[in-house]
Length: 253
Image (cartoon, rainbow, N blue to C red; front, top):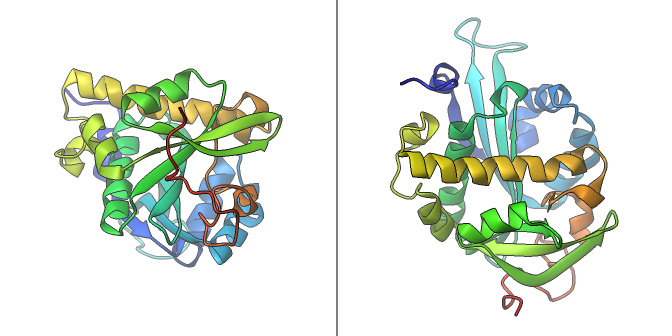
């Protein structure tokens, strides 16, 4: 049985870029504008990519003709990791276009693609900052191997704790380690794995939505690429000087 997004996903290409603005700036501007997040380009992503190392999974489609010019390539999804020099990375929940809001296959494929790339690049830990009072996102993360660490930030009237895991361990718990990329995109998986992926990705998307709406206090997730993190724990995660606190610290007792 075909799922809602099969036809769209058949047209996609997934790539990893370390030069998001150099390769995809026009497409990125359009993508963020359609999400109502156009301000992120100049306010966050331009300074971030100038000062930090990033590895970003992008999903895009290209029109058959003409093959170049305005509108030739359209971004459909993006997953961002800010990478440090000590085997750590901070994640931001995947961005998906409006029509892909429930495209769990695309979100799962980007997670697989990005996490496998990070592991191959020597990244030992992937981390997300989660609201101390989170019940939904913290539970979904714990179910796939994330554990709370000592690194914390306080912003927007809320406290966020780093949850960390190794990329291969997360892929195994999500059932994506031995899954082909095409099968993930098509959700050609058993019901239990689809349910786990759905809970994981939709919880992250919903958990960060209040922050994008300007109300961080009610967000369950804080974005890992926010410029504030350049001067906050974990020290050095973006390659800038900071306190000697790492995402890989011992788990919270």
